[in-house]
Image 1 (cartoon, rainbow, N blue to C red):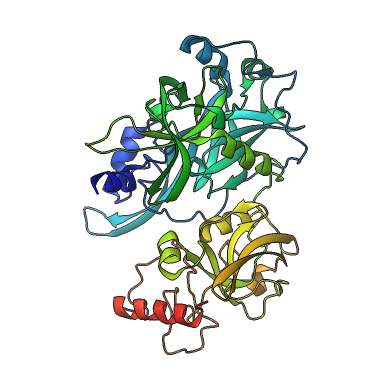
Image 2: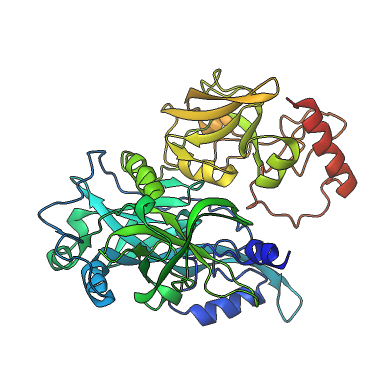
Length: 481
Protein backbone atom coordinates (compact mmCIF):
# COMPACT_ATOMS: atom_id res chain seq x y z
CA UNK A 1 0.00 0.00 0.00
CA UNK A 2 2.89 2.36 0.69
CA UNK A 3 4.11 2.02 -2.88
CA UNK A 4 0.64 2.52 -4.33
CA UNK A 5 0.12 5.56 -2.16
CA UNK A 6 3.53 6.84 -3.17
CA UNK A 7 2.67 6.57 -6.83
CA UNK A 8 -0.73 8.20 -6.44
CA UNK A 9 0.61 11.05 -4.35
CA UNK A 10 3.95 11.49 -5.99
CA UNK A 11 3.90 10.37 -9.61
CA UNK A 12 4.82 13.79 -10.74
CA UNK A 13 3.78 15.15 -14.11
CA UNK A 14 6.62 17.61 -14.37
CA UNK A 15 7.01 20.80 -16.26
CA UNK A 16 5.21 23.09 -13.91
CA UNK A 17 8.03 24.03 -11.55
CA UNK A 18 8.41 27.78 -11.11
CA UNK A 19 11.12 29.29 -13.33
CA UNK A 20 12.47 32.75 -12.64
CA UNK A 21 11.59 33.93 -9.14
CA UNK A 22 10.63 30.34 -8.37
CA UNK A 23 11.30 30.47 -4.63
CA UNK A 24 9.56 33.77 -4.02
CA UNK A 25 6.55 32.77 -6.09
CA UNK A 26 6.22 29.50 -4.19
CA UNK A 27 6.23 31.28 -0.84
CA UNK A 28 3.61 33.74 -2.04
CA UNK A 29 1.47 30.93 -3.43
CA UNK A 30 1.62 28.97 -0.21
CA UNK A 31 0.62 32.02 1.82
CA UNK A 32 -2.30 32.52 -0.54
CA UNK A 33 -3.43 28.92 -0.02
CA UNK A 34 -2.60 27.57 -3.48
CA UNK A 35 -0.47 24.61 -4.43
CA UNK A 36 3.09 25.02 -5.63
CA UNK A 37 3.16 24.15 -9.33
CA UNK A 38 5.97 21.71 -9.01
CA UNK A 39 4.22 19.08 -11.04
CA UNK A 40 0.86 18.71 -12.65
CA UNK A 41 -0.01 15.69 -10.52
CA UNK A 42 0.79 17.55 -7.32
CA UNK A 43 -1.25 20.62 -8.21
CA UNK A 44 -4.89 20.96 -7.23
CA UNK A 45 -7.20 22.01 -10.04
CA UNK A 46 -6.65 25.68 -10.84
CA UNK A 47 -9.35 28.11 -11.81
CA UNK A 48 -10.01 28.17 -15.56
CA UNK A 49 -8.60 31.01 -17.57
CA UNK A 50 -11.10 33.53 -18.82
CA UNK A 51 -9.27 33.99 -22.10
CA UNK A 52 -7.01 31.61 -23.97
CA UNK A 53 -3.69 33.01 -25.02
CA UNK A 54 -3.68 34.22 -28.64
CA UNK A 55 -2.64 31.58 -31.16
CA UNK A 56 -0.89 32.30 -34.40
CA UNK A 57 -2.36 31.32 -37.73
CA UNK A 58 -0.54 28.53 -39.49
CA UNK A 59 -1.19 25.95 -42.12
CA UNK A 60 -1.57 22.23 -42.07
CA UNK A 61 1.10 21.29 -44.59
CA UNK A 62 3.07 18.10 -43.89
CA UNK A 63 5.80 18.30 -41.27
CA UNK A 64 9.34 18.09 -42.60
CA UNK A 65 11.55 16.23 -40.19
CA UNK A 66 14.78 16.38 -42.14
CA UNK A 67 14.95 19.78 -43.83
CA UNK A 68 18.13 21.22 -45.27
CA UNK A 69 17.72 24.52 -43.43
CA UNK A 70 17.91 22.80 -40.04
CA UNK A 71 20.45 20.19 -39.04
CA UNK A 72 19.07 16.78 -38.18
CA UNK A 73 19.87 15.54 -34.72
CA UNK A 74 21.13 12.10 -35.67
CA UNK A 75 22.92 10.36 -38.45
CA UNK A 76 26.48 11.59 -37.95
CA UNK A 77 27.02 9.73 -34.68
CA UNK A 78 27.06 6.02 -34.06
CA UNK A 79 27.08 4.21 -30.75
CA UNK A 80 29.30 6.50 -28.71
CA UNK A 81 29.59 7.91 -25.24
CA UNK A 82 27.21 10.15 -23.38
CA UNK A 83 29.22 13.20 -24.40
CA UNK A 84 28.62 12.52 -28.09
CA UNK A 85 24.91 11.90 -27.53
CA UNK A 86 24.54 15.16 -25.61
CA UNK A 87 26.56 17.19 -28.12
CA UNK A 88 24.37 15.92 -30.93
CA UNK A 89 20.97 16.11 -29.22
CA UNK A 90 21.15 19.20 -27.01
CA UNK A 91 20.32 21.64 -29.89
CA UNK A 92 16.96 19.88 -30.34
CA UNK A 93 15.83 20.31 -26.71
CA UNK A 94 14.25 23.57 -25.49
CA UNK A 95 13.14 25.14 -22.22
CA UNK A 96 9.50 26.20 -21.90
CA UNK A 97 8.14 28.91 -19.61
CA UNK A 98 4.39 28.87 -19.00
CA UNK A 99 2.80 31.90 -17.35
CA UNK A 100 -0.13 30.61 -15.30
CA UNK A 101 -2.79 32.85 -13.76
CA UNK A 102 -3.82 32.15 -10.16
CA UNK A 103 -6.62 33.74 -8.18
CA UNK A 104 -5.54 34.47 -4.61
CA UNK A 105 -8.19 34.78 -1.92
CA UNK A 106 -7.57 35.72 1.69
CA UNK A 107 -7.66 38.36 4.38
CA UNK A 108 -5.35 41.28 4.96
CA UNK A 109 -3.74 42.00 8.34
CA UNK A 110 -6.67 44.37 8.92
CA UNK A 111 -9.22 41.62 8.41
CA UNK A 112 -10.40 42.82 5.01
CA UNK A 113 -11.29 40.13 2.48
CA UNK A 114 -9.10 40.33 -0.62
CA UNK A 115 -9.22 38.58 -3.96
CA UNK A 116 -6.85 39.24 -6.82
CA UNK A 117 -5.12 37.45 -9.66
CA UNK A 118 -1.42 36.98 -10.20
CA UNK A 119 0.65 35.27 -12.86
CA UNK A 120 3.14 32.58 -11.86
CA UNK A 121 5.96 31.36 -14.12
CA UNK A 122 6.21 27.59 -14.46
CA UNK A 123 8.90 25.71 -16.32
CA UNK A 124 9.11 22.62 -18.50
CA UNK A 125 10.94 21.16 -21.46
CA UNK A 126 10.26 20.38 -25.10
CA UNK A 127 11.75 18.68 -28.15
CA UNK A 128 11.95 20.19 -31.66
CA UNK A 129 10.38 17.57 -33.92
CA UNK A 130 9.85 19.27 -37.28
CA UNK A 131 8.47 22.19 -39.24
CA UNK A 132 5.97 23.03 -41.93
CA UNK A 133 5.97 25.92 -44.40
CA UNK A 134 5.45 28.56 -41.71
CA UNK A 135 6.03 27.01 -38.29
CA UNK A 136 8.62 25.29 -36.16
CA UNK A 137 6.98 22.49 -34.15
CA UNK A 138 7.90 21.53 -30.60
CA UNK A 139 6.67 18.47 -28.70
CA UNK A 140 6.01 18.65 -24.96
CA UNK A 141 3.63 17.33 -22.29
CA UNK A 142 0.06 18.55 -22.12
CA UNK A 143 0.40 19.33 -18.42
CA UNK A 144 3.41 21.56 -19.12
CA UNK A 145 1.18 24.03 -21.00
CA UNK A 146 -2.04 23.65 -19.01
CA UNK A 147 -3.88 26.80 -17.85
CA UNK A 148 -1.52 28.89 -19.95
CA UNK A 149 -1.78 32.66 -20.19
CA UNK A 150 1.33 32.85 -22.39
CA UNK A 151 4.14 30.56 -23.46
CA UNK A 152 7.77 31.18 -24.39
CA UNK A 153 10.51 28.86 -25.62
CA UNK A 154 14.23 29.28 -24.98
CA UNK A 155 16.60 27.64 -27.49
CA UNK A 156 20.17 26.44 -27.07
CA UNK A 157 21.55 29.88 -28.00
CA UNK A 158 19.47 31.46 -25.17
CA UNK A 159 17.10 33.10 -27.65
CA UNK A 160 13.59 33.26 -26.14
CA UNK A 161 10.54 33.47 -28.44
CA UNK A 162 6.79 33.36 -27.82
CA UNK A 163 5.06 30.11 -28.74
CA UNK A 164 1.45 28.97 -29.19
CA UNK A 165 -0.38 25.72 -28.60
CA UNK A 166 -1.07 24.13 -31.98
CA UNK A 167 -2.74 20.98 -30.68
CA UNK A 168 -3.26 19.22 -27.38
CA UNK A 169 -4.12 15.66 -26.33
CA UNK A 170 -4.52 15.58 -22.56
CA UNK A 171 -5.38 11.87 -22.54
CA UNK A 172 -1.96 11.06 -23.97
CA UNK A 173 -0.37 14.01 -22.10
CA UNK A 174 1.09 15.28 -25.37
CA UNK A 175 0.94 18.84 -26.69
CA UNK A 176 2.39 20.39 -29.84
CA UNK A 177 3.64 23.99 -29.81
CA UNK A 178 4.30 26.19 -32.81
CA UNK A 179 6.54 29.19 -33.45
CA UNK A 180 6.35 31.19 -36.66
CA UNK A 181 9.51 30.72 -38.67
CA UNK A 182 9.54 34.42 -39.47
CA UNK A 183 10.00 35.15 -35.76
CA UNK A 184 13.11 32.97 -35.39
CA UNK A 185 16.44 34.74 -36.00
CA UNK A 186 18.82 33.21 -38.54
CA UNK A 187 21.46 32.62 -35.88
CA UNK A 188 18.97 30.56 -33.89
CA UNK A 189 17.92 28.55 -36.93
CA UNK A 190 21.57 27.74 -37.49
CA UNK A 191 22.05 26.71 -33.86
CA UNK A 192 19.07 24.39 -33.40
CA UNK A 193 18.41 20.93 -34.78
CA UNK A 194 15.42 18.67 -35.30
CA UNK A 195 15.32 15.54 -33.19
CA UNK A 196 14.88 12.12 -34.71
CA UNK A 197 12.48 9.61 -33.20
CA UNK A 198 13.93 6.23 -32.37
CA UNK A 199 12.09 2.93 -32.01
CA UNK A 200 10.96 2.65 -28.40
CA UNK A 201 9.57 -0.82 -29.09
CA UNK A 202 13.06 -2.03 -29.97
CA UNK A 203 14.59 -0.65 -26.77
CA UNK A 204 15.69 -3.34 -24.33
CA UNK A 205 15.64 -3.45 -20.55
CA UNK A 206 19.17 -2.59 -19.45
CA UNK A 207 19.90 -0.28 -22.41
CA UNK A 208 21.70 2.90 -21.44
CA UNK A 209 19.70 6.12 -21.86
CA UNK A 210 20.29 9.86 -21.49
CA UNK A 211 17.72 12.39 -20.27
CA UNK A 212 17.92 16.10 -21.17
CA UNK A 213 15.58 18.74 -19.78
CA UNK A 214 15.03 22.03 -18.00
CA UNK A 215 15.42 20.62 -14.48
CA UNK A 216 14.13 22.98 -11.75
CA UNK A 217 13.84 25.72 -14.37
CA UNK A 218 17.60 26.31 -14.31
CA UNK A 219 18.16 25.45 -18.00
CA UNK A 220 19.13 22.27 -19.77
CA UNK A 221 20.85 19.58 -17.72
CA UNK A 222 21.81 15.99 -18.43
CA UNK A 223 21.30 12.77 -16.47
CA UNK A 224 21.94 9.19 -17.46
CA UNK A 225 20.78 5.71 -16.50
CA UNK A 226 19.25 2.59 -17.97
CA UNK A 227 15.84 1.35 -19.03
CA UNK A 228 14.56 -0.34 -15.89
CA UNK A 229 11.29 -1.68 -17.30
CA UNK A 230 8.77 -1.23 -20.10
CA UNK A 231 4.98 -1.02 -20.32
CA UNK A 232 4.56 0.37 -16.82
CA UNK A 233 1.15 1.66 -15.69
CA UNK A 234 0.87 4.30 -12.96
CA UNK A 235 -1.96 6.18 -11.26
CA UNK A 236 -1.88 9.86 -10.42
CA UNK A 237 -4.58 12.30 -9.40
CA UNK A 238 -4.47 13.52 -13.01
CA UNK A 239 -5.43 10.08 -14.30
CA UNK A 240 -3.91 6.77 -15.26
CA UNK A 241 -0.82 6.61 -17.47
CA UNK A 242 -0.19 3.35 -19.30
CA UNK A 243 2.58 1.73 -21.30
CA UNK A 244 5.37 3.94 -19.95
CA UNK A 245 9.12 3.36 -20.05
CA UNK A 246 10.63 3.16 -16.57
CA UNK A 247 14.16 4.50 -16.14
CA UNK A 248 16.52 5.30 -13.29
CA UNK A 249 17.90 8.35 -15.11
CA UNK A 250 17.10 11.24 -12.76
CA UNK A 251 13.94 13.10 -13.83
CA UNK A 252 13.29 16.25 -11.82
CA UNK A 253 10.64 18.99 -11.80
CA UNK A 254 11.01 20.91 -15.05
CA UNK A 255 12.16 17.84 -16.98
CA UNK A 256 8.65 17.09 -18.23
CA UNK A 257 8.44 17.22 -22.00
CA UNK A 258 12.18 16.68 -22.36
CA UNK A 259 13.93 13.91 -24.27
CA UNK A 260 14.86 10.40 -23.22
CA UNK A 261 17.55 9.35 -25.71
CA UNK A 262 19.18 6.09 -26.67
CA UNK A 263 22.90 5.94 -27.35
CA UNK A 264 22.34 6.81 -30.99
CA UNK A 265 20.94 10.15 -29.89
CA UNK A 266 17.41 9.19 -30.95
CA UNK A 267 14.36 10.18 -28.91
CA UNK A 268 12.80 7.02 -27.53
CA UNK A 269 10.72 8.72 -24.83
CA UNK A 270 9.23 11.99 -23.58
CA UNK A 271 9.92 12.41 -19.87
CA UNK A 272 6.71 12.72 -17.86
CA UNK A 273 6.75 11.48 -14.25
CA UNK A 274 8.54 10.02 -11.27
CA UNK A 275 7.62 8.22 -8.08
CA UNK A 276 8.58 10.04 -4.90
CA UNK A 277 8.47 8.70 -1.37
CA UNK A 278 10.91 7.93 1.42
CA UNK A 279 10.83 4.31 0.28
CA UNK A 280 11.69 4.82 -3.40
CA UNK A 281 14.57 6.15 -5.45
CA UNK A 282 15.27 6.26 -9.17
CA UNK A 283 11.81 5.30 -10.46
CA UNK A 284 11.05 7.66 -13.33
CA UNK A 285 8.83 7.39 -16.39
CA UNK A 286 8.71 8.43 -20.04
CA UNK A 287 6.05 8.25 -22.73
CA UNK A 288 7.35 5.86 -25.44
CA UNK A 289 8.28 7.50 -28.73
CA UNK A 290 5.95 5.09 -30.55
CA UNK A 291 3.02 6.72 -28.73
CA UNK A 292 4.34 10.28 -28.89
CA UNK A 293 4.99 10.07 -32.62
CA UNK A 294 1.47 8.89 -33.48
CA UNK A 295 -0.13 11.66 -31.44
CA UNK A 296 2.24 14.27 -32.86
CA UNK A 297 1.51 13.29 -36.46
CA UNK A 298 -2.20 13.83 -35.77
CA UNK A 299 -1.76 17.13 -33.92
CA UNK A 300 0.54 18.51 -36.61
CA UNK A 301 -2.38 18.53 -39.05
CA UNK A 302 -4.41 20.91 -36.88
CA UNK A 303 -4.56 24.56 -37.90
CA UNK A 304 -2.99 26.90 -35.37
CA UNK A 305 -5.78 29.23 -34.30
CA UNK A 306 -6.08 32.51 -32.43
CA UNK A 307 -8.58 33.05 -29.64
CA UNK A 308 -11.57 35.04 -30.86
CA UNK A 309 -13.34 37.86 -29.04
CA UNK A 310 -16.07 37.09 -26.55
CA UNK A 311 -18.67 38.64 -28.86
CA UNK A 312 -17.66 36.46 -31.84
CA UNK A 313 -17.17 33.25 -29.89
CA UNK A 314 -19.14 30.16 -30.87
CA UNK A 315 -21.15 28.03 -28.45
CA UNK A 316 -22.34 24.43 -28.47
CA UNK A 317 -25.59 25.51 -26.88
CA UNK A 318 -25.72 22.75 -24.25
CA UNK A 319 -25.40 22.35 -20.49
CA UNK A 320 -22.58 20.03 -19.55
CA UNK A 321 -20.87 18.38 -16.60
CA UNK A 322 -17.36 16.98 -16.29
CA UNK A 323 -17.27 13.22 -15.76
CA UNK A 324 -13.93 12.78 -14.02
CA UNK A 325 -12.05 9.54 -13.54
CA UNK A 326 -13.64 8.72 -10.19
CA UNK A 327 -17.17 9.42 -11.40
CA UNK A 328 -16.54 7.40 -14.54
CA UNK A 329 -15.32 4.43 -12.52
CA UNK A 330 -18.17 4.68 -10.00
CA UNK A 331 -20.99 4.82 -12.53
CA UNK A 332 -19.52 2.88 -15.44
CA UNK A 333 -19.33 5.91 -17.71
CA UNK A 334 -16.58 7.12 -20.07
CA UNK A 335 -14.50 10.02 -18.84
CA UNK A 336 -15.25 13.28 -20.61
CA UNK A 337 -17.87 16.05 -20.79
CA UNK A 338 -21.46 14.92 -20.23
CA UNK A 339 -24.24 16.65 -22.22
CA UNK A 340 -27.01 17.29 -19.70
CA UNK A 341 -29.47 19.23 -21.86
CA UNK A 342 -29.77 21.61 -24.81
CA UNK A 343 -29.98 25.33 -24.14
CA UNK A 344 -33.45 26.69 -24.91
CA UNK A 345 -33.41 29.26 -27.70
CA UNK A 346 -29.87 28.54 -28.88
CA UNK A 347 -29.20 29.12 -32.58
CA UNK A 348 -26.51 26.42 -32.56
CA UNK A 349 -27.27 23.62 -35.01
CA UNK A 350 -26.66 20.79 -32.58
CA UNK A 351 -29.42 18.26 -33.28
CA UNK A 352 -26.84 15.52 -33.86
CA UNK A 353 -25.47 16.11 -30.35
CA UNK A 354 -27.77 14.22 -28.00
CA UNK A 355 -28.49 14.52 -24.31
CA UNK A 356 -26.55 11.82 -22.38
CA UNK A 357 -23.69 11.98 -24.94
CA UNK A 358 -20.24 12.23 -23.40
CA UNK A 359 -17.86 14.43 -25.42
CA UNK A 360 -14.35 12.97 -25.51
CA UNK A 361 -12.78 14.86 -28.41
CA UNK A 362 -13.24 18.03 -30.44
CA UNK A 363 -11.49 18.70 -33.73
CA UNK A 364 -9.09 15.80 -33.13
CA UNK A 365 -8.08 16.96 -29.64
CA UNK A 366 -9.10 14.89 -26.64
CA UNK A 367 -10.97 16.57 -23.80
CA UNK A 368 -11.27 15.27 -20.26
CA UNK A 369 -13.17 18.13 -18.65
CA UNK A 370 -15.17 21.31 -19.08
CA UNK A 371 -12.11 23.58 -19.05
CA UNK A 372 -10.29 21.74 -21.85
CA UNK A 373 -13.43 21.85 -23.98
CA UNK A 374 -13.72 25.58 -23.35
CA UNK A 375 -10.10 26.28 -24.23
CA UNK A 376 -10.53 24.71 -27.66
CA UNK A 377 -13.93 26.28 -28.34
CA UNK A 378 -12.57 29.72 -27.45
CA UNK A 379 -10.79 29.71 -30.82
CA UNK A 380 -13.94 29.19 -32.92
CA UNK A 381 -16.51 31.74 -34.04
CA UNK A 382 -20.28 31.45 -34.10
CA UNK A 383 -21.36 29.90 -37.38
CA UNK A 384 -18.26 27.69 -37.71
CA UNK A 385 -18.64 23.94 -37.86
CA UNK A 386 -16.79 21.71 -35.39
CA UNK A 387 -16.48 17.92 -35.27
CA UNK A 388 -17.01 16.16 -31.95
CA UNK A 389 -16.30 12.60 -30.91
CA UNK A 390 -18.85 11.44 -28.36
CA UNK A 391 -19.61 8.27 -26.44
CA UNK A 392 -23.33 7.53 -26.80
CA UNK A 393 -25.13 5.10 -24.44
CA UNK A 394 -26.46 1.97 -26.13
CA UNK A 395 -27.91 -0.47 -23.66
CA UNK A 396 -25.13 -1.67 -21.39
CA UNK A 397 -22.34 -0.15 -23.48
CA UNK A 398 -21.29 3.09 -25.18
CA UNK A 399 -20.82 3.57 -28.91
CA UNK A 400 -18.28 6.05 -30.27
CA UNK A 401 -20.03 8.50 -32.60
CA UNK A 402 -18.74 11.43 -34.67
CA UNK A 403 -21.10 14.41 -34.84
CA UNK A 404 -20.92 17.89 -36.34
CA UNK A 405 -22.21 21.05 -34.70
CA UNK A 406 -22.56 24.53 -36.18
CA UNK A 407 -21.73 26.81 -33.27
CA UNK A 408 -24.29 29.29 -32.01
CA UNK A 409 -23.91 32.85 -30.85
CA UNK A 410 -23.28 34.02 -27.30
CA UNK A 411 -26.58 35.90 -27.17
CA UNK A 412 -28.69 32.78 -27.68
CA UNK A 413 -26.51 29.88 -26.58
CA UNK A 414 -25.06 30.70 -23.18
CA UNK A 415 -26.86 32.12 -20.16
CA UNK A 416 -23.62 32.44 -18.23
CA UNK A 417 -21.53 33.94 -21.07
CA UNK A 418 -18.68 31.58 -20.24
CA UNK A 419 -16.03 30.64 -22.76
CA UNK A 420 -16.98 27.01 -23.20
CA UNK A 421 -20.15 27.35 -25.21
CA UNK A 422 -22.10 25.65 -22.44
CA UNK A 423 -24.36 26.86 -19.68
CA UNK A 424 -25.87 25.80 -16.39
CA UNK A 425 -29.14 26.29 -14.63
CA UNK A 426 -31.20 25.51 -11.54
CA UNK A 427 -32.26 22.17 -13.00
CA UNK A 428 -28.63 21.16 -13.46
CA UNK A 429 -27.74 19.05 -10.40
CA UNK A 430 -24.10 20.01 -10.88
CA UNK A 431 -24.85 23.72 -10.60
CA UNK A 432 -24.49 25.63 -7.35
CA UNK A 433 -28.03 26.94 -7.95
CA UNK A 434 -29.65 23.56 -8.52
CA UNK A 435 -33.25 23.44 -7.32
CA UNK A 436 -34.07 19.87 -6.22
CA UNK A 437 -37.79 20.70 -6.38
CA UNK A 438 -37.55 21.11 -10.13
CA UNK A 439 -38.41 24.79 -10.35
CA UNK A 440 -37.80 26.63 -13.59
CA UNK A 441 -34.06 27.05 -13.99
CA UNK A 442 -33.91 28.63 -17.42
CA UNK A 443 -32.50 31.83 -15.96
CA UNK A 444 -30.23 30.16 -13.41
CA UNK A 445 -26.58 31.04 -13.09
CA UNK A 446 -25.08 27.59 -12.81
CA UNK A 447 -21.37 27.37 -13.28
CA UNK A 448 -21.38 24.19 -15.40
CA UNK A 449 -18.39 22.97 -13.41
CA UNK A 450 -16.58 26.25 -14.14
CA UNK A 451 -14.46 26.74 -11.05
CA UNK A 452 -13.73 30.34 -11.90
CA UNK A 453 -17.07 31.23 -10.36
CA UNK A 454 -17.04 33.04 -7.02
CA UNK A 455 -18.03 30.67 -4.24
CA UNK A 456 -18.03 33.29 -1.50
CA UNK A 457 -21.43 34.85 -2.02
CA UNK A 458 -23.29 33.36 0.92
CA UNK A 459 -25.66 30.41 0.70
CA UNK A 460 -27.64 31.52 -2.37
CA UNK A 461 -29.84 28.48 -1.89
CA UNK A 462 -26.89 26.11 -2.02
CA UNK A 463 -27.48 22.53 -0.94
CA UNK A 464 -25.87 20.85 2.00
CA UNK A 465 -23.69 17.79 1.45
CA UNK A 466 -26.52 15.26 1.76
CA UNK A 467 -28.67 17.15 -0.74
CA UNK A 468 -25.78 17.38 -3.21
CA UNK A 469 -25.14 13.65 -3.00
CA UNK A 470 -28.85 12.90 -3.37
CA UNK A 471 -29.15 15.25 -6.35
CA UNK A 472 -26.18 13.60 -8.02
CA UNK A 473 -27.55 10.12 -7.39
CA UNK A 474 -30.99 11.15 -8.70
CA UNK A 475 -29.31 12.56 -11.78
CA UNK A 476 -27.37 9.37 -12.46
CA UNK A 477 -30.49 7.27 -11.89
CA UNK A 478 -32.35 9.42 -14.42
CA UNK A 479 -29.61 9.13 -17.01
CA UNK A 480 -28.32 5.63 -16.27
CA UNK A 481 -27.58 3.42 -19.21
